[in-house]
Image (cartoon, rainbow, N blue to C red; front, side, top):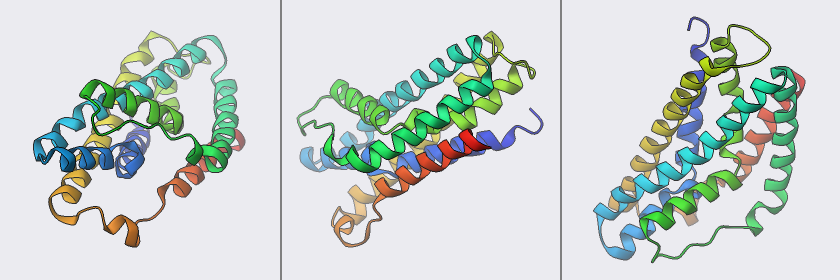
Length: 210
């Protein structure tokens, strides 16, 4: 594991970034809590939000492993970089026009579906690929293709990312529900959609050209 510590930090950092983004769920959890006048609902909402996000990221990780077992990882890296750049352009130009809309009467299952769709539409799983690849490469012992030995590493990577996302989502949701309220969003909240698109583009360029 020597020399591969940084991808774990990146995975956790991206999880924190995803948790900070209201589009990933904390705002929905707060809205549900306020609508039903219950802090317990805010906390319960974290479960489907986390599971939906984890499923979306795990789906991308599984695709990366499948492609890595078939094609040279350098080719997979370049293809992922190109896809991320295209996704960043689409998200920047059209992302706001295709919001996934669920009402406040949604159940926990529906909330999980919403979380999965939002994470997938935002390319959350694609964003973690640059941190995932060095770990699977390391597990594969430097071979051109990854194998079954990379599966536990990929599962651990998804778990680390998801744990960080859940922790930050929960902290922000409770802070907003209990003390801050949602009015501050109109006064001084940074539009994370722009940062998200920039992050997608930067990671895509890094994979494609470095």
